[in-house]
Image 1 (tube, rainbow, N blue to C red):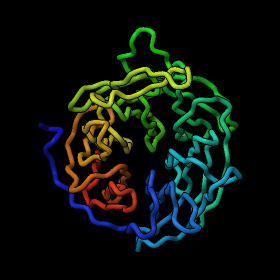
Image 2 (tube, rainbow, N blue to C red; image 1 turned 45 degrees about the horizontal axis):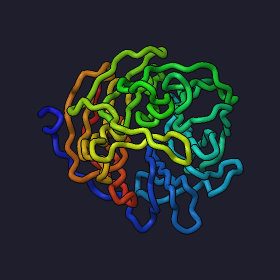
Image 3 (cartoon, rainbow, N blue to C red; image 1 turned 135 degrees about the vertical axis):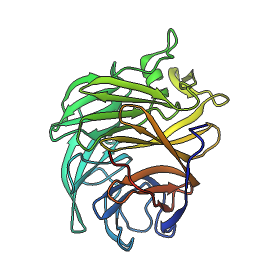
Amino acid sequence: MRFFKGQILLGEVVIQDDSLGEVEGIICLGRYLILNDRKPLGSRGKIQVYDRGNYNLVASIGKEGSGPGEIRSAVALNYIPGDEFRFSIFDVSLNRLTIYSLIDGMCKVDKVISFEGAGNYYAHVINDSIIGVLDFLSDGRVSLYNFSGKKKETFGELLPGRKSGVPLDIHKAAMQGKLKVSPNSLYCILNATFSDFIDVYKDKKLEKRFHGPLKVLPRYKVESLQGFPVMALDTKRAIRGYIDIFVTNDYIYALYSGTPFKRHSGGKLIHIYSIDGRFVKTYLLDREVFGITLDPNTGEIFGIDKSLTKIIRFKVSAFKR
């Protein structure tokens, strides 16, 4: 029951749906809230920056396209560890990471990195020379690239449950999730959206693998599409587990759904673990959200409302060791 009982957090809308199209990701960067909006309204770009003092829009960048700073399909919006002024966006369609700088409300492109390898679907800067990328094609879970886009090495253990004869890329597609990096760059945390397992890596070694209440692995089938094998989730048995995570140097905040895959749902539970996988406590949100971020300085949690067109703020004290 520890996974389902805890402090109730009441949310308030801080950014209304009349200014947002379809929010995919959210991060805090200093005094700003940065959103990845897949379907921006009007002439706005896909990256929108709001001042957290009054929640007014102060910058918009990333128009549709393939030129420098332009975006087609952004799937990973992340801060850069140890950097108070920059953040990154990974564009899965263009297979490139763009680093932006944000100073005094002015947002601009700092660096564009195109990756040489195929099959990449999520990226996060680890430090000032290495980028971690989740991909479908390597033997491990994380490929490491330098800032020139060259692959250096691969690490990470697959989740169990791969049946005999199942292609590697099919199994990896079923365990897809997100890669997050602690602010001190010491830990890489991986979740799998269709299970409730979380992996903690340090120095490319699996330090801890732990799970939530259901202890389930991704449930999927191999089907054929135009003569090629593809992964298809078992819609009768698959579940949405940890659908998003946020990492500090000491804690992992894991947004939990636990609902059947066939229901398009977010999560109302945030399970908090220490960085070594020890369960700490549960927050119960008063509404479903599809993504979260945290300001460790104020203790505020921000969530993307289930409509994908509102941003919700939950006030809570931050954990400190």
